[in-house]
Amino acid sequence: MVKLRLKRCGRKQRAVYRIVAIDVESRREGRDLRKVGFYDPINNQTYLNVPAILDFLKKGAQPTGTVYDILKKTGVFTKSNLNQTKSN
Image 1 (cartoon, rainbow, N blue to C red):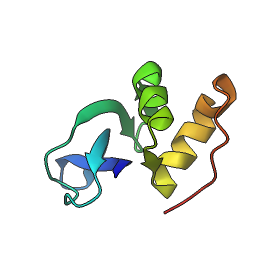
Image 2 (tube, rainbow, N blue to C red):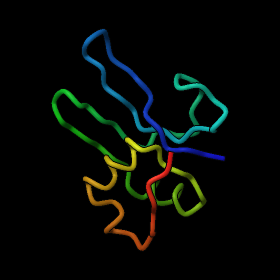
Image 3 (cartoon, rainbow, N blue to C red):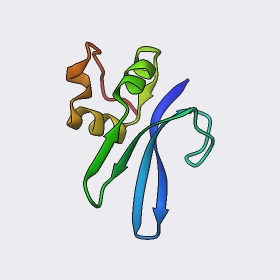
Image 4 (tube, one colour):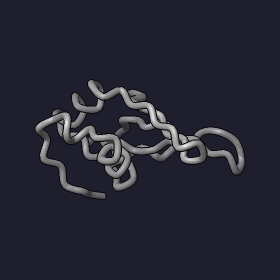
């Protein structure tokens, strides 16, 4: 099973995150299938590759809670006809 989750990058006290599609059994810093976005909580910046995210969601990928909130805030679910429920 594939999940969309955050992968921590950056230095101490200045964390930034990549949104990646990754196998469920991989650890947080493990090898990802594809990078589909970027999230900087300090500067409140978000970059999303929406076609890639929608493709993974249509194939059955489940976003984690935090990624779901980011996608919902940016309006990804309103652009698609996917009926997603928040799951962890």
